[in-house]
Length: 475
Image 1: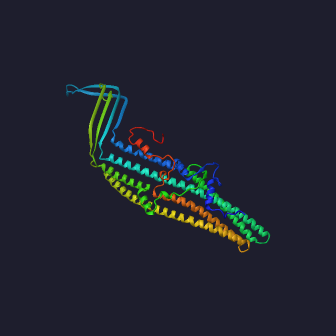
Image 2: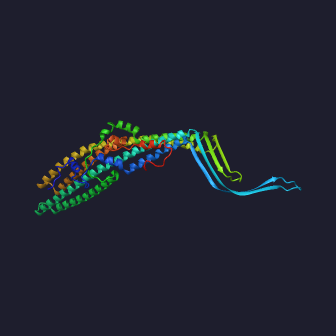
C-alpha cells in the first residue's frame, strides 16, 4: 500500500523546489526575487506607466515656454494685377471737363516678414503653471510607484499560487494512488467474504471523486501557470521555496498605519494633486491681471499690390504692449470658481486616500496574523489526521471500523495537507500584501538585483530643452 502518513508540508515544498514535480523542461530554478526582478523589467503594465511618466515630464517644458520668446516668420509670393484711374484736374462746369490718368499692369509681389514676442508679465500665470506641472510630474511618479507595488504583489501572488497549486496537484495525485490501493484491498477482502458489496462501491465512489479532484487541481495549476506567464513575462522553471518579508514591515500596527498615511504612494499622489489644484486657482486668477509683452516685427517687400512704381519696401518696429482685461464675458470668473471647487474636491480625496490606506493596512495586518495562526493550526491538524488514519486502519483490520471510516479518515488527511499548503502560501502573500499596504513594496526595499528605473533621467533631458522631436521612448 502507498501511504502518505510520513509526508508533511515541509517535505512537500522541498520536493517541489528541487524539481520532483517539474513545471517545464528547462533545468533552471526560479526564485521569488528572480521572478520579481523579471516582472520589474518586462511587465507591460509597468512599462506603460513609465511611458506615462515620461509624457507627464513634458508638461514642465510646456509651462516654462511661457518665459521664452515666440518667433514666427511669414512669406507670400504671387502676381498682383493693378488697374487704377486717377483724376488729375478738376473740371470747370460749362468750360472744361475733368482730366483723368489711367494706369494698368501687373507686379510679381514678394513679401517676407518676422515677428518676435517676448512676454514680460502675464499675471503670474507662467510661474504658477510651472509649479502645477512640477506637481503633476511628482504625482505621476507616485502613480508609477503604486504601479510598481501592484505589479510586484501580483508577481509574488502568482509565484506562490503556482507553488500551492503544484503541491495540491501532487497531493491529489497521490491521494488517487492511495484510494486505488484501498479499492484493491477492499475487493480482495470482498472476494474472501470479509466485506460487502457496499464497501466496494464506497471505495469506487471515493476513487472517482479523487480523480475528479485531480482534474480540478490540474485546471487550477494550468491557470496559475498562465497567470505567472502574464505577470512575470516568462514561463516558469523549477520554483524554489519562498520566505515571508515581515522584516521589512513596521513592528506594530500603529507604526504601520502612521507610515502608510504619510508615505503610501496613493496618499502622496493625492497630496500632489492638491498642489496642482492650488496652482490652477492662481493660474485662473491670473487671467484678471494685465499682461506686458515686447513685440518686434520686420517686413521686406518686393513689388506692391497697390502701385506699379513701388519696387522695394522695408518696415520694422519694436514696441511695448500692455493688455488690460476689463470684461471678457464672465468666463474667467467662472473658471476661478470652478478651480476653487476642484481644489476642495482634491483635499477631500486626500483625506479619503489616507483612510483607504489605513483600512488596507489594518486588513493586511489581520490577514497576516491569521495566516501565521493557520500554519500552526493546520500543521497540528495534519499530525492529528495522520494518527487518526493509522488508528482507523488498524481498527478496520480487526473489524472495529468500516471501509467508509477509513475513506473518511483518508480524505480528512488530504484536506488537512491541502490546508497546510494553502496556509503556507497565504503566509508569504500576506507579508507582501502588508508591505504594499504600508507603501514599501519596491525593488530597493526588497533588495532586488535589477537595474532601477530612474524617473529623473528623462525629466532632466526634457526640462530645459528648447528644441528636439525624439523622445526617450524612441531612443
